[in-house]
Image 1 (cartoon, rainbow, N blue to C red):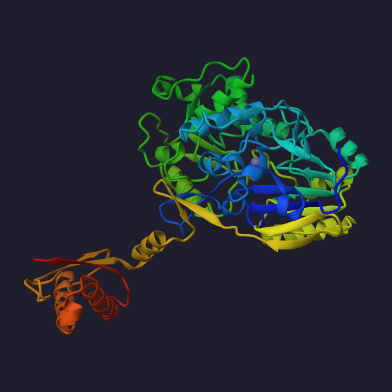
Image 2 (image 1 turned 90 degrees about the vertical axis):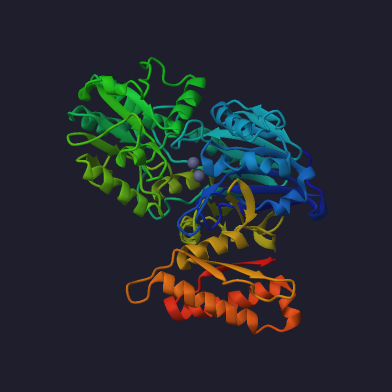
Length: 560
Ligand SMILES: [Zn+2]
Ligand SMILES: [Zn+2]
């Protein structure tokens, strides 16, 4: 490797995933400040919630790096979770760099690129596990870790100014069931070589001990499923292929056939088979045929453990699934955790299942039927002992996780710690780690198929209308702006009652609008915009009086 020039710098720049759990988008830059070459590690999405009505998918704003797109040498995807690869289909056309992934991740990425219509445009190189990639001044080596999806990779990034260990998502599982164990030797020898900085998963930094092994989940699920009579549904993340495998083997051990319910279950099963997993498993029963099986002979493996409204389990719970019915005497096992923010939809889902007479099993009342895929404190300590970095850079966490991770690293005598926010450019070398710049970062919303800036006007208006209702006003005027017939006012989402009916309210609003138009001078009445502004102001005041609310007012001016 070439020695560094005096003006070379090595920087880390998160544009997503720092100060949040989701939409990971990490950049490493090398070279003089005006001629940096970049690599990207992961390009994921996050999901909307009640505060973003109609927006399900959110991704990082790539504006900063888009300007240097020609200097991006490659995009490396550590694993196939949505928060790591979900944005490639949307944002690749703005970055246009070659992509690198291991086979399982590449299989799922290709599907995304096909959906986005850019499969033939994106150069995607499949890298074997533990493979190496050279991208200009960056020499990359993949390191096999364990997590909750096949083929999780850490990335050792060797540069002329030092070695970085980017862990990606990981845990230490001595018996992950699928895939190899965490490659402790590779990390230790990297530690011997000398690690400048470790950019590390912070998700479970508040949890003591170890995350636990997938093998223990297998024992617990085997025992539970084996003890049940009636139909059994198991809800888990489809991407947790080891968990799927466990449920499948447990089902077969007690004479049940498996029916996959939900699109992503089928997608993940195909991806798993593409890399040789699910060997010797009996063919899955199509959901159209599952009802021909006796209740004790079937197990449904379902999507929707987070209460997602259109997923399989939600449709089963509200009785609208075309083929799958659960009721009294049946069982639903949640082999998953509650992702923060999903508490309410999950509770609603569980209440709906319960209402049908379905018995529920969660990791709260049945500890052992789920384990996390992220490192708890003892695992983090081991990782620091193996890698021995000079600088700890926590990522994959909210502010509280990152700060606690900094404190942990300090307790472990790691000499330097820095916890950047999205957009903070950290110089890792030369010299001590320091934030040297703040660049544009933010979120893009996928709103009705269109990528929009965060909190764009349409979304703000939709949120406002959802909370306050809407008035639609039609004003017909002649060429001189004189009203030619009664102004029509319609209400969306606004109530009336016996004392003051909605019809009466709308009649009064119509009169208020009329007064507002008549008060305008001749010149203003020539201008449609002036008319609609005046009507809008007047009706907002009236609505405040009537409903104590400020609805959205949409005025249409017709010249007749
Ligand atoms: Zn992640
Ligand atoms: Zn992950």
